[in-house]
Image (cartoon, rainbow, N blue to C red):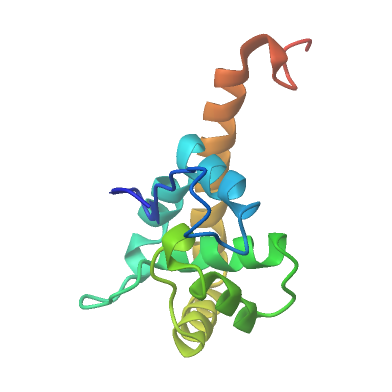
Length: 140
């Protein structure tokens, strides 16, 4: 791992044989999140739900849940598999912190859902723009 950019550490791959990780396939997902700007967009969108002295960013917590699901998890506690690889995923919130955030966002209802959806739409638009002629809307 080298320096941290965004919400996740930047991972460097070398052929030395030490420092291996069990979720190496997740690096592609983490890099996609970083390169698309989804990490900063979700972080900004969920800033109103960040408590003043909070250690963990609500956007990163939500992205960690999404990554855990993408890696085969089926419950909030499955973010534990990310916690086991700090070199890939950075600091991951505890299970109670994840649950509290989900409760808070659920209580906010449509306001939180609108914030998340607008961040996703912003990133989707940016990615399709970058895709140019290869984007899904290129042929009308």
